Image (cartoon, rainbow, N blue to C red; front, side):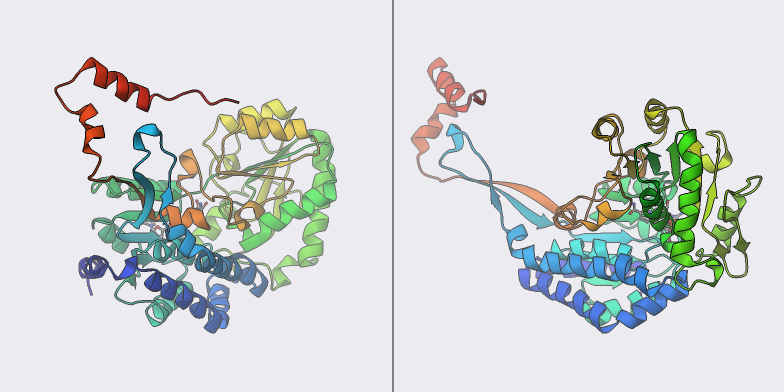
Length: 464
Ligand code: NAD
């Protein structure tokens, strides 16, 4: 089936109205739950094939987070679908005024390779719970997971309303020529611009979940071993190929040496003396990315790590010290297990550095000083902030997940996913009676009627 026929078939299904019912939405969510529960082993296997992902990380970062979001949607769907009444002034007292969420239509979801299951299914949860038809485009760079999604989606979800298109750049370019009612893209900012330009041709709204360099500040008053554990856990997850991984660390020179020692101890504790032999440590997705990440080590002398194995696409957890702001590694998102440390004079220097660059997806601050934390919250802008830890802020579905500026637009998770894929329709329902009251606004206009209308519609200040 060509992409054009796939999309026109989805549009036909949407027009039938079937996806608007609570029953259909519930059935798809239950189908997704079943898809996970009956195929957990295959999902773990596909992630192992694509990224050498450990079972532990597959459950934590791909399977359970997705499963929990499905359950959350099933628990709350009825309430979220309900129209909400809004406050109204004297002039509208007799009217029913509500916000009614309605599906957008046919939506396209384009996923990346780094969390290929989670980042394809999490947006899908919101799209179907909001009552849309969906075209999923998994990343061609995680083929085992893409193939599994392609095999399982038609088995567990309504084939007429949710379809999968496989392919790479050429196929995605073709798909993007088509008209959608919303596009959700997760991937790099550069391709995000291509997606947004294609969407603009049809005035299609987009949600862009992008990446960038996530800064970390480590203050002087912290327990250094705790900081090191949390930082290295987040940096080494999925071998550093995580959009919210800490990208670089800034701290004063006096902290750098003890921090590095503590980081080394964390890595040994997590993965043993020889990380290459540890089967819970991931690998780089492909040769191109392996070479890209390895090239960042050129002319650097790591404080520890630095070992690579091209055949195995292995790059050891690596920490670089005394890195300069002008070094190559400070230009692009690292997206690999290398962590540069930049010595700084003070917090002012860190905040200025962060603010001179693109807005990150996440900012991380380790400090026991509330004033320092408050400064980061007030003076920097990022998709999210996690204080005294990394990554975990995305695991709470009551917080929106998304970027700002170059790290993305829009957000999702939990209710935010339902909202992203819904149009909030304003509904005012008036009675055809009481026409005499409406006479006030009809010509011939009189000063008396104007006074009445102005009095009835006038806003007063809130009494505090
Ligand atoms: P990518 O942009 O290379 O690819 C993502 C998707 O876009 C794939 O499905 C691919 O087929 C498609 N694509 C690639 N090039 C295209 C083109 N020229 N035209 C049309 N489609 C194209 O991204 P990636 O390498 O898969 O992912 C890495 C990036 O994604 C990093 O920057 C990372 O930070 C970011 N990311 C962000 C999030 C988030 O939630 N914000 C999550 C994961 C990854």
